[in-house]
Length: 163
Image 1 (cartoon, one colour):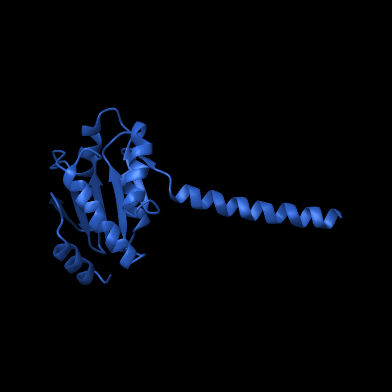
Image 2 (image 1 turned 30 degrees about the vertical axis):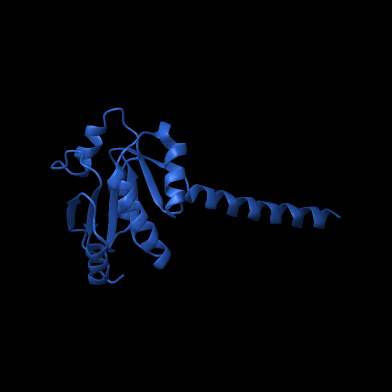
């Protein structure tokens, strides 16, 4: 009987640990001054797309829809998503990401009372226009793009960068 209880406890621990890691993958992470470096380190030596958006941005919803479709076609799409909204908007942010099929990806939300500081850490030349995307190659040289990224541009970049 003791062995059965021990086995049950081990099994339950593994099940709960698996559930916790799945839940953690879908959480919104606070984006602070050092977060861009963490994102770049996560994609070290690999090309990736960094996209910035907001709930208030009409074109952002169109871009998220396109990115969601691309993720469905390529589950390994190298994508990091950053919302310029605040952590107080977490419920609406999660709903929007889920609606577009992006809830399982690296997702961040601005976590500074002064968003201009965060925009500056990302790119001193960025003035806050959205959507804003950065296409990083494998050496992490990046191309900045303000406004809606078209499907043709994204598809060409993905092909050029081995995705």
